[in-house]
Length: 293
Ligand SMILES: Cc1cc2nc3c(=O)[nH]c(=O)nc-3n(C[C@H](O)[C@H](O)[C@H](O)COP(=O)(O)OP(=O)(O)OC[C@H]3O[C@@H](n4cnc5c(N)ncnc54)[C@H](O)[C@@H]3O)c2cc1C
Image 1: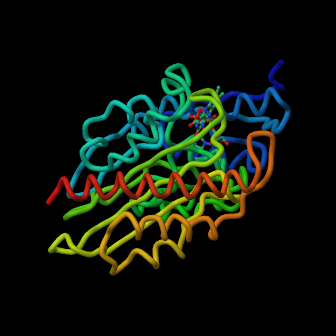
Image 2: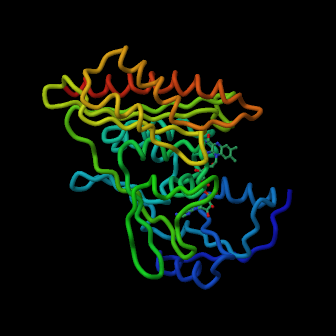
């Protein structure tokens, strides 16, 4: 498969990249690792006339914890996230998502900005970011703005970003107290495959570590965008955590999704797997929260 023709731009600052996107409005795309975009261009799913490569912009490579917030630059690779001690300590489920993504070759090229920017409902990183309440920092020609990651997704491959905007960083407030999270994905094969279902769960317990104060569950591959399971979350908040409660919440999550049928699995199978993965990620979240008591 041959790539369609395009003009290649190599900006060295965010401002220059946004200017290029604005100047070639509607015909330009940001290019990060290229593991999604170049494949789509080869398949002729999209053929932007201008590619704005982000690999020469140093400010996109930031990965640090400062004042209770973990900052992950949009250009940080999935393998760096997978190996990061700061990520493992502060937001373990994001590390789990990174280690589940693709193969070592893909992880070395793929970036977190590209994983979010691809807006695939089955992508591995957005779910953990959603349950941690992460915000995206977007830069455009008219300045910078922040938005909760859930508001970024509009549909498969579609986002609410303006044509001159790019994600520069992801800000995650590091959870405190008795809290924990878990991420799991299921595909037909262990790697090199699109997820059939993926789930992330986050739990925060009250100061006595007896009842659930906060619960967030995000479901992937079972709707046009990553989804929150509000029914399951409502059931969990205020309750005493135990296996029976997690079973009920997992059942509730199956009513919060709209899975499709494709060659990877039927809608019924996907719903059944939402049940299993929700239960297991809640148990992972609980184990991490308990380890902090
Ligand atoms: C063999 C193979 C296996 C894969 N396995 C998985 C998997 O298991 N899980 C998974 O989630 N994905 C998988 N993918 C998809 C892809 O690798 C990931 O989505 C990856 O994170 C994309 O990142 P990238 O840096 O390569 O993005 P690119 O391909 O460069 O860009 C992807 C999209 O995001 C946009 N974009 C890039 N950077 C930004 C930015 N900073 N701001 C705004 N928009 C931006 C681009 O314009 C493009 O539309 C796989 C792909 C292949 C080829």
